[in-house]
Length: 411
Image (cartoon, rainbow, N blue to C red; front, top):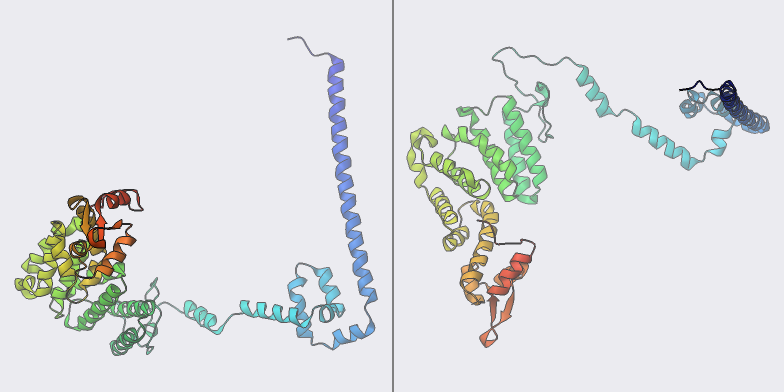
C-alpha cells in the first residue's frame, strides 16, 4: 500500500488534540460545579448555626451530656460537620419530636444485647467439655420442657436432663397431647427427649433402654395420628434393635405397622419386608410365633389383598384395623378405591345401581357417603329406572380420562 499523505496525518493529530482538550474542559467544569455546591452547603450550615437563639443554646446545654452524645453518636463518625452543628444547637431537641425520638429509642433497643444473648456468648466462650474414653454425659438440667436443636458439638451436662426428669417430661407431653392435640409441640418435645437419651447412651439395647423404647413407641403412634410418616419411619428404624432384645410387649403391633407402611409407601420392598417378618430371628429370643399374632395376620391379609386387587377384603379389613393401622391405610384405601371405580365402570357398563356401587367401593350401606365421594371424583350419576341414582359407566370413564387424574389409576 502507498504511504499516507503528510497532510492527512497532521489532520488526525489535530482532531485527537481537540478531543483531549474538550474532555479536560468538561472535567474542570464538573469539578467547579461540585465545589460551588459544597460552598452553598457550608453557607447554609453556617447560617443555621448563627440563627439559633440563645434560649435554645441554654436548653441544649442543660441537657445531660450522655443524652446528647447518644443522639449524635450515629452521625459523628460519618458526618463530623453535622455532628458539631447538632451538638452545639438545640435542633435535635427542637426539630425531632417525641414520637420520632421514641421510634429511635425502640430501634436502638432492638439492637441492644439481651440477657439471653449475653448468656449465649458466655457459654460459647467457655471451654468445651471433654470426656475420657468410655465416659458418658450425665445430665444435670431440671427443665421439664426443652427446645430441640441439632447438636454441633459435645453437649454440656447442664443442657441435658437426667432420666428422672425425662420421665416427668414424657408424662407431661403425653398429657398435653391428650388434651390439646398439639402435634408440633409434642413432636419437638419428644425429639428433645430422644436426643437427651441418645447423648447419655440410654438407647442402646440394654435393660436401661426400656424407657427409650416407650418414648420411641409413643412418638411413632403420635406421628401416625398426625400423618407424619417421615417421623414415624425414623422411630421405626430405632425400634427394630430395641424390640429384638425383648424390651417391649408391643413388638407385634409395630411389626404390623412396618408391614402396612411398606404396603403404603414402599411397595417394591414388600418381599424383603415379608421375609424379615416371617423370619424367627426378627422376634425376641428367637420366638417365631410372633408372626401368628392377630395384628400381624391382619396386616398380611391386607398385603395379599392389595397385591391381588381383592378390594372386598381390603375395604373390610381397613374398616376394622387393629390399633392405628387405619391411619397408615388411608392413602392406600383411597388409591385402591379409585382403581375399583375404574374397574366397576368397565365391568358393569353401561350403568350400575348406586346401592351396588356403594357396596363394591367399600361404603357398605352408606349411599350418601358414596354419592359424595363419587361427585368429588367427578363420576357421572344419572337417574335410572324408578328414578333411582345410577353410576353411568361410560361417561364416568371418559370423565376420569379427561379429569385432573387423567387416565386409569395405576396399580
